Length: 422
Image 1 (cartoon, rainbow, N blue to C red):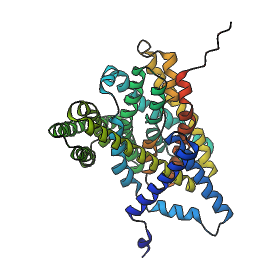
Image 2 (image 1 turned 90 degrees about the horizontal axis):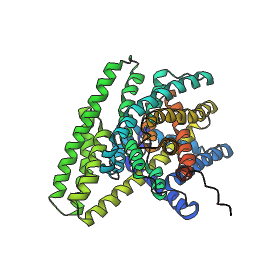
Image 3 (image 1 turned 45 degrees about the vertical axis):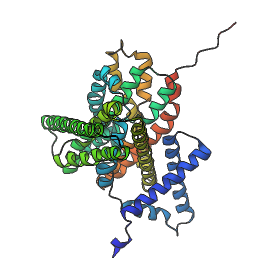
Image 4 (image 1 turned 180 degrees about the vertical axis):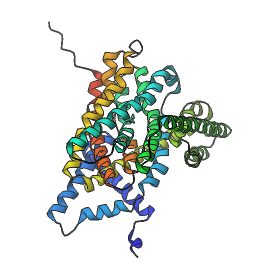
C-alpha cells in the first residue's frame, strides 16, 4: 500500500524541472549571476529555508517531506544510466579537435595520471581528516571520494576564458582535460567503488587491466557509433532526423556500453568529439548545425540545473550534522592541494608551450567541480558513508562554483597593473 505514495518518474521530473525553471527565472530577473553560480546559490538558500521552517514550525515536517521525495528517486539509474551520457556528449560537442590534437600530450597526462594522482592524494588526505574528526570511514571509501571529486567541469571557466581572450592552447588543454578526465574519473570511480562496496582486496595489476579494457573499449565503441552517425547524417539534410540520430547515438551507445561492461562515459566523449567536429563541419547544413548545437547546449544547461537542485535538496538531510560539515569544509583545501600537485608537476615539464607562471593559477583555480561529481556522489549506495561523501561533495562543489567560478575571470586577467605615473 505504501508504494502507492511514491512519486512516479514523471512526477519527479515535473517537480525538478518546475523548480529549475522557477529558480532560473529568479536568477535571470533579479540576481543576474552566471547560471551555475546562481542555481548553486539558490540551492543553498532553499536548503537553509527548509531547515529554518522545520525549526520554526516542526509540526509541518517539510524536511521529512523532502527526504521522502528524495527516497523515491533511484539515483543510480537516473544519474549513472541516464543524465551522465547526455552531459558528456553535450560537453564533447564544443571541444575543438584541432586544438586538442596539438595539445594531446598535456590533455592525456592530465586526464589520466592527473586524475589518478588527485584520487590518491585526496583519498589519503580525507582518511587523515576523518581520523582527526573522529569519523569512521574506511580508506577504500576515502579513495571513492577522491575519484568522484577529481573530474573537473569546464562550463563556467570556459566562458570566462573566452571573454578574457585566453590563449587557445590553454583553452584547449583545460577543456580537453575536463572532457576526458570525466570519463577517466568515472572508470576509476567504478573500480574503487566495487572494491569499497564489495569489501574485496585491491589488486593494482587487475585494476590497471580493467581500467584499460574499459577505457579502450569505450573509445572504440564511441568511435564506431560516432562514425556511423556521421555517415548517416552526411547522407541526408533534414535537421529533425539528424537530431534524432544524435539522441540515438547517446542513448543507444551508452546502453550498449553498459551491457558490454566498457566505459560509456569515454564512448560518449569520443562520439561527441567526432560529431562536434567532423559532423558539424562536413555532415550538417547551417540550419542543422544551428539546431543541434542549440539543442545540446540546452540539454546541458537543464541537466546541470537539475543536478544542482538535487545536491541542494540532499543538503537538507545532511547539513545539520556538524561532524559531516566539518569534514566537508576540511575537504576544500584538501582538493585544492591535490589539484595543485597533480597539475603543477606536469606543468613544470611544459614550460615552453604553457608558461608556468601564468598557466598554473588558471589551471588550479579553474579546476571547477560540478555536475559529474554530484552525479557520482548521489549514485552511491545508501549508508553512513554516503551521507559523509555527499556532504563533502556538496560543500566542495558549492565552494568551487561560488568562490572559484565567481572569481576565475580575475585570475585569468591576472593582477591589475598600476596606472602609469606622469
